[in-house]
Image 1 (cartoon, rainbow, N blue to C red):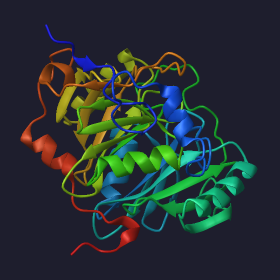
Image 2: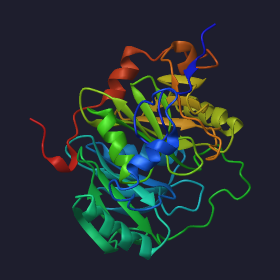
Image 3: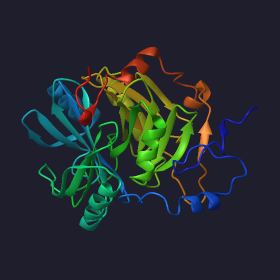
Image 4: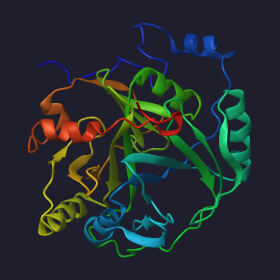
Length: 340
């Protein structure tokens, strides 16, 4: 039987395919006088912001069905938390069309934010806001910029923490944001920016179709999917355990919300999955038990794209055409302008 993965298919630093027998020390020496170092050390994926014409219905879904708790509401907007200590993990804003608002990463302190501002300039990336205090619920100190495909990215610290929402850990509701998958028209360029500029590491590839990037020990916080246009693929929320995961699926079933795909367990990341659609048609996922990466021993692998590896349990089967269409979304140029 053929191996499901090709261990030496890629490096874990965004440098692309590895030639077998090439020494990593040689590669490091070649890069020693290369481009500026990453702008900051990202601690975690903090939050995501979504824009939609169906903001009211979406707030109702995420608070009454999905399991998040509203912490603040504004004019056509809401900020919702999980059971962890992040002030919020999801922002919803009323807009004319579905779009990704922003992706938020946490950094250590103001010094790191200020250093990131300087290093972004060295990388040729213009700031859209900050560094400074953030005028938003939860406050914080941070900055914002656009990645090459127009996605708004925020780096922040000192955001207000909240008391854990489920201290006994019994509720089958999301604990935190797990990951965001982004459709890209150039997966190599996207990976290069997020590794060289933001310092993320590539954990695994799914052939040359998907790349899974981490910023801490979680296997991935961001994944890129090669696509025809730039858009949001889906947002995943972490459940505390596989029991919480299954009970969460059961709760959605009681609300007449059946999975689009799942439950199952992915090969890359080894995490459980069950995908649903929110009232805006955006794809949201419950997940649990993602691989924990040990930096000294982890080897980036290239997984073959087969139904057996997309769902190790064999319970969900391959994704349907409907799922793929929903995950493709609609073109979203972000900060780069309005699509034709």
